Image 1 (cartoon, one colour):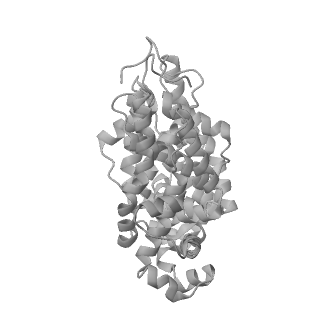
Image 2 (cartoon, helix red, strand yellow):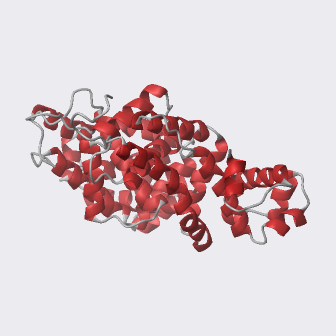
Image 3 (tube, chains in turn red, cyan):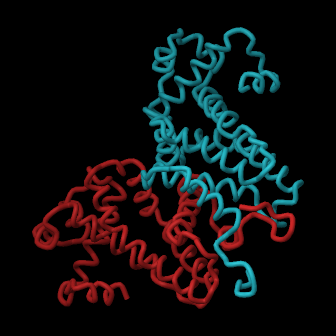
Length: 204
Length: 204
């Protein structure tokens, strides 16, 4: 599915698709371990079992390599669930983020952005990926809007940002377990809010 | 107010209160800069302008010193607002967190927990402070419950954790501005939820 998406985005990967995937996976692992400044193309090539020139031919700069590596996560983690219910869609995405977050590599990536996020090159990568990362949340929210599930004026990006932030805090800051009961409490808080409904409810 | 609270907690600080405050402020600044492992009592003493033995006399271990320094934030940042409205209380606390987060020192503390949070000594400090950090959120939520504002079954700690997580993400990960309009959108999402009310609303 990731492959099909990339092709559709006018990046022809007919040959060498396995090599590309291998290099991007090695890049994620290395950048999570060594940081953006510490990342060396030689180490990525060695880990992927390819020649250094193979990496440089496709990604002339470290910036382009890291950008493509981060992009490969986005399409995968945020693949549209489209279950017909916003609650189920959010739960499916939250479960995928939680499964990813259990891997040491993703803790390394989180650390990368906290520690090196001020770096101008890394910040430029994140800015350039913002549209990619927001496409799926937007699709999920638009489908929910068409079904009449969403309250008017709700900020779709904020909803997904808060969901991701709560998961990151639980995983990488509190280092507490993410079980399905917790995920459901989180999603239900975001869907229903904390306020009582009915006459006692304070006006927003 | 902090002073009054500490006294009430049977920590007599009649003399040397200014010294204690100075040492704790220096500890926060140094631990944010150098990390937990990199923290040196000599540097704290020098920054606070006191003798090393003055620090050791009150805090025999680094662990006790850092614990007291972190505790000094908790009572201050999470001081009860008690405005009579949950929305106003949450906004007051969120504004205080946002103001703190604008200081480089707090970015350093966030980084400390992301990078060194697995350290057993630091983890033990956090566990021992959990009750202190949860006291005020609980008081705010209990007051809202008494006013009938809160929906039954809402997890008070989760609500505050999500609020803090969203602020931390915005401040230290996205490095995006926190203005009052954004704070209000965040608080209103947590209070009202994303779902439309009325017949079109999907059952939770």
